Image 1 (cartoon, rainbow, N blue to C red):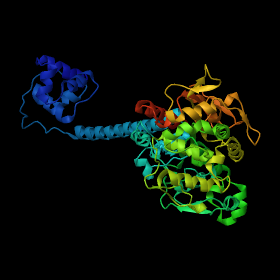
Image 2: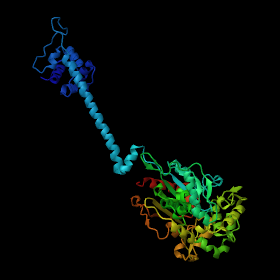
Image 3: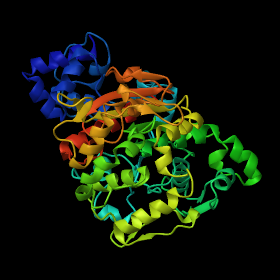
Image 4: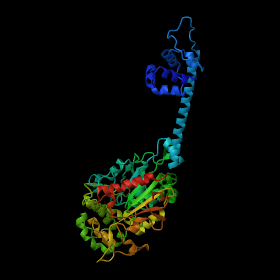
Length: 543
């Protein structure tokens, strides 16, 4: 008879339930059940306790024989030899050793499961890179750089306290994005400077270096090579590896003329500029050396004039039509250059008739032009001085011919995601031919939208402005905001998995004017939802 059978027989013979038996030995009922089922052998101290409780010898319990369960005296006779506990002590040691081995095996299995899970899950959903990143501290989030357009400003500009460029009526877009966990920066670029100069300024701010406009470019346009110096980079570790070898990249977001800046920056980082390298030699800026195409993760353009604005072509023939704008933008618009008018419209978009309170920094020190004084009068004087110096300014780059030159030296980068968003605030007119503004268009954009909606012609460079250019957002035609002419593109179908690198993902045309996407004449809910969706989409793309 086994020890389990003996324990069961003795318990029942003495009229004890499992609960009562367990309580008398100071153990759980489950322990008793396991003893009686033979799953577990009691420890030696419990065997001794059972021997005393049932009045049997320990030998009886331990030996597998048919000894009868006759009661014996609980007192051990003097003549009875002292019980030898050698067996039970060694048995206990063996059990402890076995228990330690079992625990060690279980721990090893659990550790293996944890390692396999940590590797298998990231590999299933991402890949080997994601697995390595997870082990080394998680995936690095890439910062978002919000780049303003013509006449705009960044977070460090005094005018931003009067009116936010990124947010307008809706609220602070950058702050909202930060609350969603994004790292966001708003650099300030020359508000009416050329695209090339703005790109050089953007690079210097991101890297914390002195602005270098390039020896060749500066000589060609008769201005100083170097500009403002930035001692602290906006993006720490940009282009460097952290967390298991992850390269710190940036997401570039450009509104209006800022769209040209962000895509040009990505292109120069990747391909550099041969002319600048040959002219500057050893002193060439790292921006013009190329080889840094992997520093940018995504480029997003919002209402960007990729192919220029037909408004610049229409001004000569419709100058008189702008006389009614004076009450809206606070200046006399008669005989203004295209740059003056467009800059004034930007100030009007922000709801500022006097765009400067004392001083407005045009960042034109490399041209020998300092900060503008005296409100809008100083603005006009500064723009006049700039535009008289040649074509190195925003007015020319915003024209279809100027935009064509930008497109000639700017290329997409194979490993970068490109997104473009267009807006339209016009529709086919019933009484008037062409496109007319829809209800809800910002008043300051009614006249430009109307003019662009009717204008056709041919530029000096031979670019035809036909009916396809008429649908517009008040400053930029839809056909221009979609993507640079002739470049490969993909019409987004709503499936993020189908988004492609190295070509333009055209995200469609929304209803609204040039300021809608940055919160002008728009609700906070709609504005913030757009940027929430943008962050979610970009951050979820497979790296």
